[in-house]
Length: 86
Image (cartoon, rainbow, N blue to C red):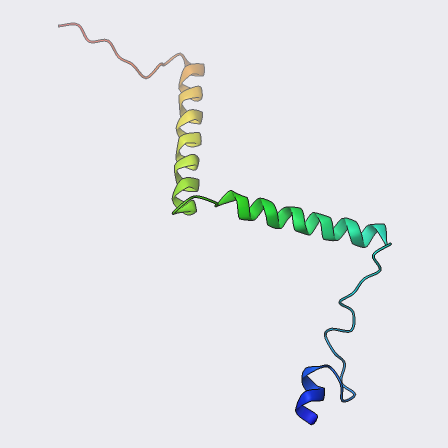
């Protein structure tokens, strides 16, 4: 019987389930729950349909870096293209 009480939070021990339920009418608690749920949904959708999300992030990072270099070259007057006449 001690095993049953220990897994259900009985037996005089402080249970981790004692403060699971918050007041549903508390707007601050509800806001925190909704924000956590929204973050979880965004994180789940971010990688949906991708075999390797890390590779996608790396490609995006490289593309942004290339774009920054291109903009810097344009500001200096260099277009990256060179004409060669023989």
